[in-house]
Structure formats: C-alpha cells, structure tokens
Length: 504
Image 1 (cartoon, helix red, strand yellow):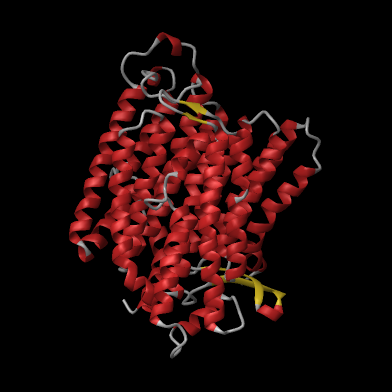
Image 2 (spheres, helix red, strand yellow; image 1 turned 60 degrees about the vertical axis):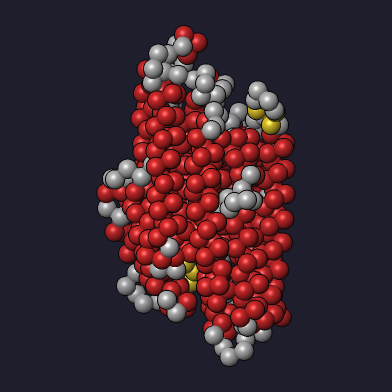
C-alpha cells in the first residue's frame, strides 16, 4: 500500500473531527466562513470516500483491506484497528456522498450554524468510524458517537408539527429517537462483552474473534442463539425494525433537512451493517436459527411501512414510513443467507440511502418556501419548482423500483434471493413494491401536479446550493441503475466470505 492507502480510513475519521475542532475557534458571527470550511471539509470527505472505494482490490484475495492498527488498551486487547471489506466499502462511499450533500444543504441554517456544523461533523465521524472499525470496542464507541448528536441537532434546530388530532413537539421526536436507540445499544454492548468473554482471545479484534468462532466448544449453539437475537433487536431498532420502528418517522418529521438526510441516508444503515458485521460474521449458528424470524419481520416491515406511508399526509411521514418499508428489503436479503440476497441487501442500503437523502433535500426546499408539508394543502408545485419536481420524481421512481435506477437492481436481487428461499414471503415483498408504486405516484400527482393554489404563486425553485446537493445524489442513482457492476464486484467478495463462514 502507498501512503494514501495506509492512512485514508483514519483520515475519514480524523477530518470531520478536525473540522469540528477548527469551527470551535471560528468567531460565531463569521457565518460565511463557517459554511465554506464545513462544505469544503465535506467535499474533501467525499473525495477520500471515493478514493477508499476505488482502492479496494476486489481481486486481491484479502478479505479486509486498507488495514491500519494502533494499540490503545493492551491489557484488554483493545486497539484502534481499521479496515474495510466488500460490505463496508460501499457504505463508506455512501457516507461520503450523503455527507457532502447534507453539508451543502445545511448552509441554509441561519441560527448558530457553527454549533450545528460541529455536531454534524461529530455525527459523520461516528458513522465513518463504525463502518471502518475492526475492533468491537471502537465499533461500539463510534456507533454511540453517531447517535448522541442527533438529540441536540433535532431538539435545537428541528421543527415541531401540529396535526389535526395531535401535536408533535421537536423535543418529543428527539427524545424518543435517542431513548429508543440508546436502550437498544445496551443489548449491543452486552453482546460485545459476551463475545469478548466467550472467545477468550484477549482481544476485541474482529478477525481474531472470527478465528475462535469455529473453535471446538468455544461458541456454543445456545450462546450464539441468545446473542444473535439480542444483536438482531439491538441493531434492528436503529434500522427501523418493526415493531420498534416508531421513533424513526417521528424523528424524521422533527429533524432539520440535512439531519433527516443523514438519519435516513446513513444512520439507519448502521443497523443493517451491524447485523451483518456482528450477527452473521461472529454468530453464524445464531443467524441460521433466527433467519426465518428475521425474514418474517422484514416482510412485515415492507408491507406495514408501505401501507402506513399510503395513509400519511405529511411529506416527511410518507418518506419516514417509506424508509421503514425499504429497510425491510434489507432484512429480507440478509435473511436469505444467499449470495444474491445478501448482495441485494447491501446494494439496497446504498440505493435507499441515496434516494431518501434526495427525497429530504426536495422536501426541505418545499418546507422552507411554503412552511407546510401537508399534501392536502400542497398542489401544483411543478409549475413553480421545475427542478424540485424533477429531482423528487427521480427519487420516487427509484423508490418504486423503476428499471434504470439503483433501486430496481437492489430490489431485483433481494426478490430473487427471497423466492429461492421463502417464495411466499418473497411474493409478499413484491406486493409491498406494488403498494410503494401507489403511494409514490399518488404523492407526486397530489403535490406537484394539478391546479396550483394562488398562495403558491410566489414560491421559487431550488437554490443553486440545493441544486448542487440534489445533483450529487442523482448521479449515483442513475450510474448504479444503468451500470451496477462497479459496486457489485466490490460487494461480492465480502458476501462470499460471509457465506463461507455460514457454511452456505
């Protein structure tokens, strides 16, 4: 490895932390300077994320690449170890894309934008750290670092909502989100400590623990069964798993636009990634025992989320429940324990992260201009927001699985894997896609087309910043939809290695 490859992963963690530190010393009134430092740092992260993805040698034979390790607490075998495999590499790329778009959109923040960007960069550092950590202790540390800033970001800069029958204060959404995810994190911490103690390897390093998984008498079937169930629930909460999903739509509605982008775009993916990284890799027998339950829950996610989205009138609630539905495909793909299904689940995390961030970019623009997200009030916006309409329609078509966009490829792989393992559940998953088409097309027709109310005569189209952010998100949707091979050839080695550990 050259110098850049040796240090790229740690730089992805250090740079957002450094950006946050630099912002601490920038005078608060210098809002333009703060914006440029933040956007420049986010663009640099995008460039390095692309570099890390392209540096991954899918023909190189090594399962984990770009590895770097520093001792931290030797008495417990804790080290700051980093590396990526075929599953983590696309997630690093996803984080770079969504973070860059989110930082650009966040330039709209006027009140205390310095503090906002500091918290946003801490969140981004936590996400990167989770995806690249090879040590379970630091995996959990960065996982928590990604979650904690959400409370302040939503509680301070979010928005409260008043509906016909109830109110949703922003503090409610922020507190519910953090309390549910932190409670689930307790299960994850128990699992990590349990695996460390049971492996008796004197190390939290994932590769070292993996070597103990198949050691005679080391990880009993009962131990793996109990630990995997806790892993599935612990990470499943963050991924929007039914019936623990209710924090997610409420959090989306309360969050400012860029936080919603990162929340749905990358934070929810930490849940699916955790099930793969810890559940499938370190607890393979437990995975086999609970796969059918995960499959059933994933199918419920798909149907329930789609039907719930169909019943909503708030744009953010529609997208929030849509995210619950689409994450169900991730669970289904993982539960197939097949190469095509797990590949589809990984690609679905990437595609959904991009399309949902694009949704929230446009919805945020609509809310700033109209001060409402009520689809019963919004109508005919296409005549005034041509670019906003175009981007929203592209995101919607990707969500319903239109061929030529990334969502189609991901769902196709999941469906094929599902029909090969559980045909009835696979058929229900296809039904969920049909319901998705109904609410997406209805949403587009109701909000953007038809006769425009006179109250919207003076609204404007997307600003140049919003246009650039949306373009950053649209390009990979088309690229992966038309030519998915660059992503698939990186994902497949990681998938094959995991399935080999499962004996599949």
